[in-house]
Length: 560
Image (cartoon, rainbow, N blue to C red; front, side, top):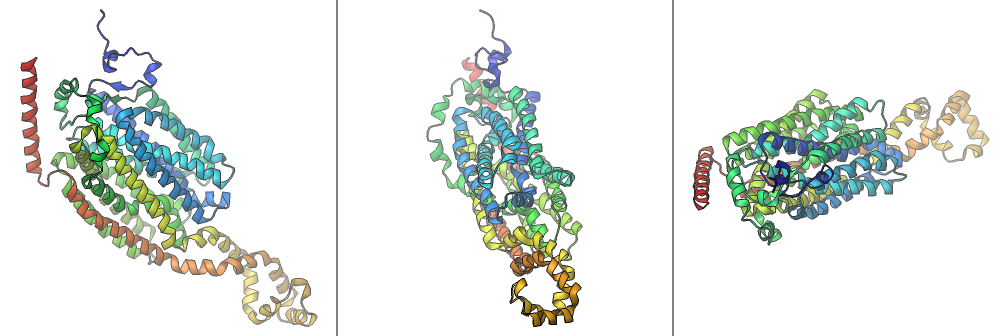
């Protein structure tokens, strides 16, 4: 009998062809360093592209609203429904513990790419757009669970914070790609083209993932690896593991306060992040008068430094072997930075680079808290049952998407000024400019024009018309008559827009205080997670684990 090839060994003895490799992705042996890093890189890039596709609509929100004639509240409803759909998709993705993760990622990429290339840009009406965006959100909810599960599978606990920091760069770099692309191209591109750019990126990565992405077989991934040196023992144990037995009661095991409370805590900690993703353009355009491009350029500072910090803090956390102290430092710093941002919201003379510096601080401190949290959360999940990693991440995915949906629903109720400013602010501003000469005439003779307004244009009494000609002249009356459409806009929407402009800063400031509250409530949730506070004790645990591994390997060799 011919010896099995390396390829057949990696797929459990199944014969493979170039065609069957497109869906048979299971690895029966833990991969060497180079292919393992390649798989991790594909997963991270997948996350970047997916969040680029999910977030790009918010960067061109005002253009989409104008194109479909939506109300601002309807646009917010799209986000609410999308996140609600994504929440339940995350729960469904708990099946990744039974069905695997890689194919969910690969074919999810294809579906979202087609939706961004063809579906959303060609939506005939706002209702169709909502349905298609909900499908994108459903796929995102699935991949939100499948991709961190793959990251966990391919990263031992020593190195987990770096790996999870890399995965967390997906949403952050996705946001950065959105702001970089739109701030560079919006002056020459339509909103439809901006969505299609993200679709082409999805097509490219789909081809890469289709050809090269793999995942560990259940018997390998259903074990805890503390260090890469555990590889031999993990493979030796694999033959005696039954994946179905390991999964019994997995939902009950994950419905635990030690899983649910940290998931809720990090979800409310990220309220400021959600607001930045979905409303950065709306906030800076309505309160500080920034254009879409300028507001997106400001976001670059946040996303870039947040992404760098996620990796840097991940490395530091792995070197120190602890998570919790860094989470607390990052959270306390984030609270201080968010308070500063809330205070500056009502100071209209705050400069662009002041906000840029503040966004750098918020990005750095948020990354300091989040990368160690992701590592600690996955370690807490696998401590309860390593075979139920995707199930635990599904609980987190459902929680975070539910919080996003609820916050998206309540934000317009707090920031009521956003609706008139987004829907009619630009229209009123344009009408004010065009009607300026007519307004000067009207403002100089308010009593006269109050009388004229009581009559239709063709039914003004001759005596009153003669009085008008005498006071403002034929040219003045012609100027006012020519500006009637603009004056009608100002009369209809001007008061509400003016009031909203006066209220906007205070209402946004209220929401930023809500975000501060979410960060404060996160602090006690950090204590529920597994892990040491002391680097010295954490290293001692690692040494004891290494000794136990060597003893078990020696026993297995003796038995053999």
